[in-house]
Length: 179
Image (cartoon, rainbow, N blue to C red; front, side, top):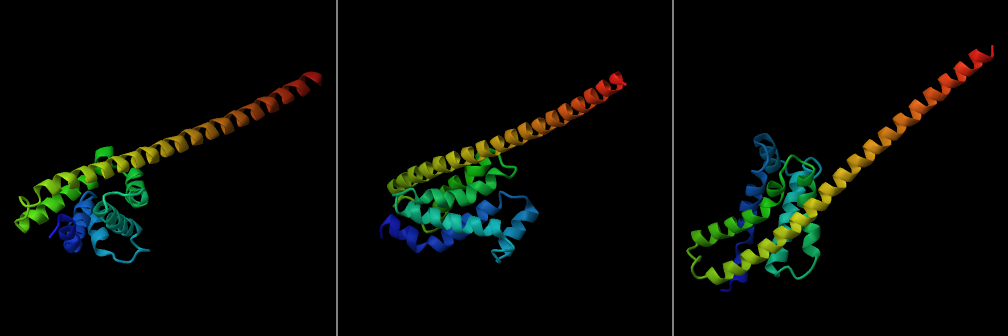
């Protein structure tokens, strides 16, 4: 059996373990909720993670042939970019996939047999991780730009108010002097 066939055959177990490892990066109470709540409306983050890793895994099995993987990575990374994750924590879920697959091949006693394939798999996961990092950085840049724009807007409104007050006082002072 080829390595690709092995991954496809064990996809369910790999995805389950990968989902667990991603969810465990959250605080304990959040992790419990993400694992238990199955309703996508009550648990949109958990749903995004699950759908994201499923799509990323499918794309990795195909060798990342297209930019379709970006949409799946975006589902996961966009959420993590606005949370209290460092860049390494935000995209580290990709590297966890390597550990999950190695764990699966170790359990089945196939790590030596698939050694060369695992090296190629690692390279593919690394490429996907770099894509995830780019998405993370773009999201963070957008967040910072929104913050800068908000500060500019607040400052502008404060200056407008200050000018209005100054003009009002000046007008009052001018009319007092005329009287």
